[in-house]
Length: 272
Ligand SMILES: C[S@@+](CC[C@H](N)C(=O)[O-])C[C@H]1O[C@@H](n2cnc3c(N)ncnc32)[C@H](O)[C@@H]1O
Image (cartoon, rainbow, N blue to C red; front, side, top):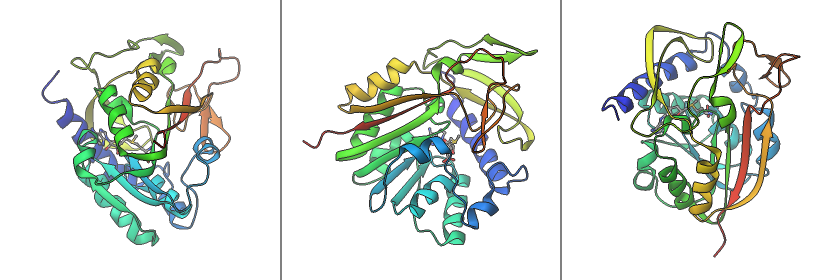
């Protein structure tokens, strides 16, 4: 594995956190959030259930808007992210919104050391595990951070869609479905998924993980599958030809061959 993948990704996310919280594109609608608007998208809002009074760990929380939307629902939330810029922005947003939460700057793989205790709910959505080389270790950490009887909610882009890229209007298989930990996919971008333009091109390293490794890793860590769903929308344009859909989401255009774009699951840690 390149020695610099983590440094490159950290630099990428520090840049993006600053760009995203400035919100020139309006993608995150930070002002709307501060006025009381919900940051969660319809899929997770409809699936997470009642979080009121629950202790909740939000993994890879970015600048905390989703974390704080869960606080608005009554959760007692801790957000973790490795980007100091994102964590500083999350603490600032907590202060500005008057919504209390704990924000921890730490690598996902350091969560057992960095975040004490266990939680009623662990939560991770939209664009998280593609930054992680070792999905089994991730699954073990999720299980370890759950209290007995606790729930893990996970939602992300579908591995079947992650292998594709759109070029000249054609969606083609481009990336392997399983990225070896030591040879991540490398890319450079000038614009974030929000539409905000980087001051300079920024590079990053990503991993695709098979569905069987994601669900299998969580099962092997002792969690029990309660629900699983696949979805035809995403909160960003994975492919340039995607068109707006209900609830700030995007879908494939009419006439395109339908494929699953996202999946979600709820798993429970047995009570004893
Ligand atoms: C696409 S964002 C997740 C956004 C999230 N859905 C939200 O609440 O807005 C991905 C986040 O993962 C974080 N991240 C990437 N690699 C990480 C790592 N190894 N440890 C902890 N956080 C990481 C980034 O800093 C970024 O904030």
